[in-house]
Image (cartoon, rainbow, N blue to C red):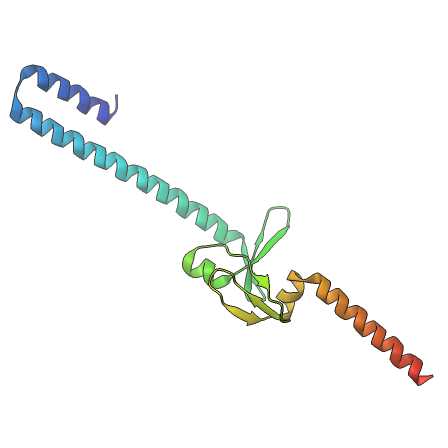
Length: 145
Protein backbone atom coordinates (compact mmCIF):
# COMPACT_ATOMS: atom_id res chain seq x y z
CA UNK A 1 0.00 0.00 0.00
CA UNK A 2 1.14 3.52 -0.78
CA UNK A 3 1.04 6.55 1.47
CA UNK A 4 -2.25 7.82 -0.02
CA UNK A 5 -4.00 4.48 0.45
CA UNK A 6 -2.73 4.26 4.04
CA UNK A 7 -4.02 7.76 4.77
CA UNK A 8 -7.44 6.89 3.33
CA UNK A 9 -7.57 3.74 5.45
CA UNK A 10 -6.65 5.78 8.55
CA UNK A 11 -9.44 8.28 7.76
CA UNK A 12 -11.96 5.42 7.62
CA UNK A 13 -10.76 4.03 10.94
CA UNK A 14 -10.90 7.45 12.64
CA UNK A 15 -14.44 7.97 11.34
CA UNK A 16 -15.44 4.72 13.03
CA UNK A 17 -13.87 5.83 16.35
CA UNK A 18 -15.77 9.14 16.11
CA UNK A 19 -12.89 11.37 17.35
CA UNK A 20 -13.28 14.73 15.60
CA UNK A 21 -9.86 16.12 16.57
CA UNK A 22 -8.06 12.97 15.40
CA UNK A 23 -10.15 13.00 12.23
CA UNK A 24 -9.00 16.58 11.43
CA UNK A 25 -5.35 15.68 12.01
CA UNK A 26 -5.64 12.67 9.71
CA UNK A 27 -7.26 14.82 7.00
CA UNK A 28 -4.41 17.33 7.32
CA UNK A 29 -1.93 14.49 7.00
CA UNK A 30 -3.78 13.23 3.92
CA UNK A 31 -3.66 16.70 2.31
CA UNK A 32 0.07 17.00 2.99
CA UNK A 33 0.66 13.54 1.52
CA UNK A 34 -1.25 14.55 -1.63
CA UNK A 35 0.83 17.74 -1.96
CA UNK A 36 4.08 15.81 -1.52
CA UNK A 37 2.99 13.29 -4.13
CA UNK A 38 2.21 16.12 -6.57
CA UNK A 39 5.58 17.77 -5.89
CA UNK A 40 7.33 14.46 -6.50
CA UNK A 41 5.55 14.09 -9.86
CA UNK A 42 6.61 17.61 -10.88
CA UNK A 43 10.21 16.94 -9.91
CA UNK A 44 10.22 13.68 -11.87
CA UNK A 45 8.91 15.56 -14.92
CA UNK A 46 11.58 18.23 -14.48
CA UNK A 47 14.31 15.59 -14.23
CA UNK A 48 13.05 14.02 -17.46
CA UNK A 49 13.03 17.42 -19.21
CA UNK A 50 16.54 18.21 -18.01
CA UNK A 51 17.84 14.82 -19.15
CA UNK A 52 16.27 15.35 -22.58
CA UNK A 53 17.75 18.86 -22.82
CA UNK A 54 21.19 17.56 -21.85
CA UNK A 55 20.97 14.78 -24.42
CA UNK A 56 19.86 17.28 -27.08
CA UNK A 57 22.69 19.68 -26.17
CA UNK A 58 25.17 16.86 -26.78
CA UNK A 59 23.87 16.38 -30.32
CA UNK A 60 24.06 20.07 -31.29
CA UNK A 61 26.83 21.37 -33.52
CA UNK A 62 27.39 25.10 -34.00
CA UNK A 63 28.39 26.05 -37.54
CA UNK A 64 28.02 29.30 -39.50
CA UNK A 65 26.26 31.04 -36.55
CA UNK A 66 23.56 28.39 -36.29
CA UNK A 67 22.93 25.06 -34.57
CA UNK A 68 22.56 21.80 -36.41
CA UNK A 69 21.43 18.48 -34.93
CA UNK A 70 23.42 15.41 -35.87
CA UNK A 71 21.93 11.97 -35.34
CA UNK A 72 23.73 8.67 -34.88
CA UNK A 73 23.78 8.05 -38.65
CA UNK A 74 25.51 11.37 -39.36
CA UNK A 75 22.44 13.09 -40.82
CA UNK A 76 22.02 16.76 -40.01
CA UNK A 77 18.88 18.73 -39.25
CA UNK A 78 18.69 22.49 -39.06
CA UNK A 79 19.85 25.20 -39.07
CA UNK A 80 18.37 26.36 -35.75
CA UNK A 81 18.57 29.79 -34.10
CA UNK A 82 21.31 29.94 -31.46
CA UNK A 83 19.59 32.70 -29.49
CA UNK A 84 16.27 30.85 -29.24
CA UNK A 85 17.94 27.64 -28.14
CA UNK A 86 20.48 29.15 -25.73
CA UNK A 87 18.05 31.56 -24.04
CA UNK A 88 14.58 30.05 -24.46
CA UNK A 89 15.50 26.37 -24.97
CA UNK A 90 13.43 26.36 -28.17
CA UNK A 91 14.52 24.74 -31.43
CA UNK A 92 13.47 27.30 -34.02
CA UNK A 93 14.45 26.71 -37.63
CA UNK A 94 16.09 29.62 -39.45
CA UNK A 95 14.68 30.62 -42.85
CA UNK A 96 16.16 32.39 -45.83
CA UNK A 97 14.90 35.94 -46.30
CA UNK A 98 14.09 37.10 -49.83
CA UNK A 99 17.17 39.35 -49.72
CA UNK A 100 20.32 37.33 -50.25
CA UNK A 101 22.26 36.56 -48.00
CA UNK A 102 19.85 37.47 -45.14
CA UNK A 103 18.69 34.71 -42.80
CA UNK A 104 15.92 35.26 -40.24
CA UNK A 105 14.48 33.50 -37.20
CA UNK A 106 10.67 33.53 -37.32
CA UNK A 107 10.52 33.26 -33.51
CA UNK A 108 12.83 35.98 -32.16
CA UNK A 109 12.98 37.94 -35.46
CA UNK A 110 16.78 38.15 -35.43
CA UNK A 111 18.14 38.74 -38.92
CA UNK A 112 21.74 38.41 -40.05
CA UNK A 113 23.86 37.92 -43.13
CA UNK A 114 25.30 34.50 -43.77
CA UNK A 115 26.06 33.28 -47.27
CA UNK A 116 26.73 29.68 -46.16
CA UNK A 117 23.40 29.48 -44.29
CA UNK A 118 21.49 31.22 -47.06
CA UNK A 119 22.81 28.85 -49.69
CA UNK A 120 22.20 25.86 -47.41
CA UNK A 121 18.58 26.95 -47.05
CA UNK A 122 18.20 27.98 -50.70
CA UNK A 123 20.33 25.63 -52.82
CA UNK A 124 18.33 26.71 -55.90
CA UNK A 125 19.76 30.23 -55.57
CA UNK A 126 23.31 28.88 -55.45
CA UNK A 127 22.67 26.70 -58.53
CA UNK A 128 21.22 29.69 -60.41
CA UNK A 129 24.22 31.82 -59.43
CA UNK A 130 26.64 29.16 -60.72
CA UNK A 131 24.73 28.93 -64.02
CA UNK A 132 24.84 32.69 -64.40
CA UNK A 133 28.60 32.81 -63.72
CA UNK A 134 29.16 30.00 -66.20
CA UNK A 135 27.17 31.78 -68.91
CA UNK A 136 29.10 35.00 -68.26
CA UNK A 137 32.40 33.10 -68.61
CA UNK A 138 31.25 31.57 -71.90
CA UNK A 139 30.14 34.98 -73.18
CA UNK A 140 33.51 36.52 -72.26
CA UNK A 141 35.35 33.69 -74.00
CA UNK A 142 33.34 34.25 -77.19
CA UNK A 143 34.13 37.95 -77.15
CA UNK A 144 37.84 37.27 -76.87
CA UNK A 145 37.81 35.29 -80.13
